[in-house]
Length: 507
Image (cartoon, rainbow, N blue to C red; front, side):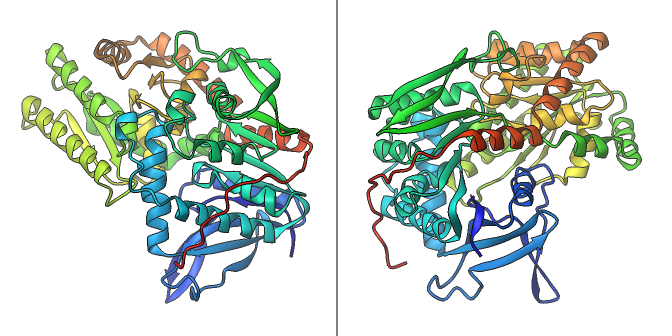
């Protein structure tokens, strides 16, 4: 059945688990991701479709249905699963996306390496996503493509189906032109994104950077600009942008530029936080602390998350403030997201080495300054730790948004707690009531955590009230409504675009 809405995302919209020898589909474990919000759009159309990839030993005979029909609480929709080989996934995701794109997106020039990239494979995978979307889309349908892994899909899809409307949302930072243009495929990527009808970003800075890239590579005209509202300006932070382009023209087509920061499911987290079982868990954690102050840091094991810089700051804090020994504890959660990748293994090793050094230097039989956790914590437990923590310390050196900071504020139904937030996280432009830190500055990092620990109750509560107002204003449902409105208001201005054809491999 043809679909009025097609969502193109590298992940499937559910988790596959084996029960009694049979594969069954379950809702994603993370209740706070964007997947439920994306699926909610299926309830607004007669039939929708989702395009993702699925690992197959033999792509010509994958051993599973490539298209399945789902009828659940979100509506009726198809899931088109593209069979990709282990080698294709490795080249497409671990090499091209993580070794070439990821460091550029986060402005880590020194980590950028495109020598091992198999660009024909990346084209091939993106072409297959575009083909699947084209096959699912009804006449004039809306196709919504997500994230940098699928940069080439809009251009290919415009060739295959010039009748459809195309929206693209970028979930990571988008860097300045002098960084992005290090990519040898920069023009091909920019041309593809400009084949969309609307291109969306979290914050104005990322949108402005994209427009700067487009203008540096192609004949692009900015037709409209808008002044950024006060709710998206945080004076003194690195990512402020006061005016943002909202409409471009390229090759006779109009391309709308959308800004909508993704949020968290505030109501869901608040309900979890108020649950008697959770409140009992919070009280238990605080009893176990025995009067110590708890600092909580949660993130992936990734050089962009600033874990090493944070641990070094904590070491300096204890060194310069011996009165804190035995009175403060850091729960440092660093979860590996990409096992087997040398860059992340090295970061994990450094985190473990520094943590061990700090515990060895300052710890006693009765007290250890750091509890290092390298596994994922169930969300219900994490909400309890959010509620028990005196300080949430979230200081990535670069981050598209950072939902942990928003989760912490949502969980603080008691109105207490302090958020220390990097000015290089996208969320910093919204969360001005946080204690803002520069992770590249020893002085800024050290002073921010010291200030947070010593903050009086009245100031803590005043700041938390403002944080909670901000996250309620832009929760995940508001993000969905804002993006949906942008897509609905953007008329499709058709016309096929010439994109380099993918080189089809035998894999």
